[in-house]
Length: 289
Image (cartoon, rainbow, N blue to C red; front, side, top):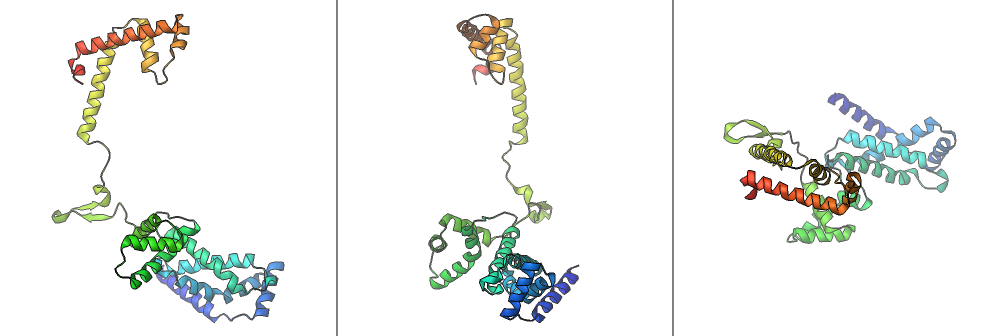
């Protein structure tokens, strides 16, 4: 499959280089035929004559680690978009107009596929992504003693972005994506592990989880035993006021029980005091918490 792709790519490049250049009048006539009549032959002639422009533009982005054939295909998409929007009556050469669309299409592809972590898509972020390495190299040549923070500040001023954004992008461009399932050596043992195995977990340790479960079950038993000492009205008020997810108001409980809200408050306080006394008397552990 890889050999076929390379062969097809070479054939496309040879065909593009063999395509004749278009004179201004010929280019204008073809553009009019395509715009007014949707003449597919005219479109094919225009695009083939400018495929060398696509290849040249794609070559400028080959250092981003993406297949050259994919870059050329994306550039061809931009070329077709330019042909669809081109107005031959403006007296502008098609190559001048198409260059922007070809570059934009390739840049969007690079941004989408360079890393699994998506970067910014604003014009400022795109400018930072595609110019950072060039500016960094130039500044390093001009002043080898320049510190990282000073370099980031100068680049930020040049591109009109924040220095923090420059630092983040610089860190991204200096590294590459790593799979969490990538195998890692376990030292002298030679055992194979994955990067995922070395990530720190925020979850409690197994013994802590078991201890928490036991404590919760114990508290539940203590509370259930204490609630059994309340009379039905006290139990209802405590359950609806303190144990329900949406606690009832004093007024609403008073209407249901046929008493004033002040009386509900008194019964609730008496029930809470009873619970406190029972819990501290029967379970000394609670008193020490």
